[in-house]
Amino acid sequence: MEKPALPSKAILIIALMLVHMMSLGQEAHRRWRKMNQIRNDKFKLVLPEVMRENNIDMWIVTNREGNYDPLWPDMGGGYTSANGYYIFTDNGEDRIERAALGIGGYLMEEGGAYDYVGNAAILADYVAERDPKRIGLNMSKNFGGADGLSHTEFLELSEILGEKYADRFVSAEKLVSDFRSRRVASEIAAFAEAGELSYTLAERALSNEVITPGKTTLEDVAWWLTEQQFKNNLGTSFGMPSVYITGPDGIEATSSDRIIQRGDVLMIDWGVGLMNFYTDMKRVAYVLKDGEIEVPESIQKAFDKAVEAREILIGQVKPGKTAKQAEKDIYAALEDRGFSQMGLFNQPSRYLDKTDVIIGCHSVGNWGHGVGPSIAFFNPERLTYELKPSNLLSIELFAYTSIPEWDGRKLRVPLEDDAIVTSRGIEWLYPVNSRVLLIK
Image (tube, rainbow, N blue to C red; front, side, top):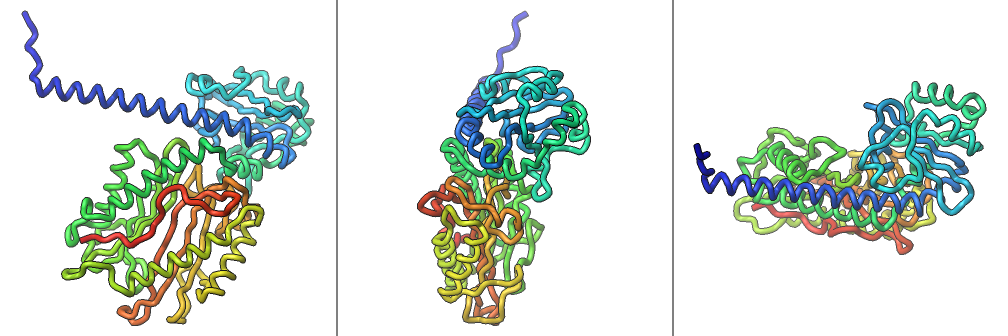
């Protein structure tokens, strides 16, 4: 008996599904190839420099099934059935020796970044043969991204290598910061791609494509952004996107069931994850009242003051300075131009004729908040680090300007976009926030 023919509509649907599956496979392969290029470039160009600067002869990154180190994606992933180790040894040559013991699998091995892939059982002999004087381990008091070594892994590693080498263990905290925050060209290209997706989706979210005043809620917008991440196979390091309304008394509601109304000032704070890179950026919008065709003058002035402060800020960020020195220079330059430094976050001064500014230009890159030099009061250790060419920074500030219609209370205007430090200073990686978006 002949099987009934499929209806033409069903055939079309199946064909479209197959094309979609093929395109997904091609995109996955494209991303994997780019991540491999980044890894090989970093191991070749950055790793020798940062290991020698930090006086570390051998760097051991441990992994355990179900408990991978935060640097696992940087190292190439791979499968670990029990304990596994990425091992990098400085033998005094141009190239750092690279081995993966107890870690394997197609994705890692086909990446071509390691000289040797073997069994974890040879770890003690492998280390003894190279006899490193200082062994860096991912132990960190100051940031979690460099603190991947668990207590039990530390004890087991000490037992395997013996007292002789356990006495040579040192924290790799600064090594991790330097390795991750000094970028190669292939990383900048990948991060810029993530930035393009991030700002494009944010600006679509703050438009009439998504928002109907009087009907759409803040959480509707947040869920739309989350759905776009799902559709585009993007991650995030921030959870639910922050979609919020700022009024005379500060932030009124964030990603809640609050319905967006005409006259609202809206903000988005979010980022996307792509190829082991995570952005962090903001956008600002105004919902026009009936009869309005542009942003009210007072709100536009507040936004313009924030943009002015940003231009002053980026003029002070140069390689060779510590982040702390850059912070001092930024605030001094702002005060010279008539701005006021805010003492405590979200507590503007009572001077109505001045715009108060507080900055938080944190490291960015492999997480929304990175581990490199950070011009931010909330990263005290990373304030001591020197800014280097190729560091990625989130240029983040909050400017508070008096609004006459609010009885002089101040509008908090947040600006944040991601940039790179070069020999010339700050350079943008995609079109930054330059206007208040209008929602009709």
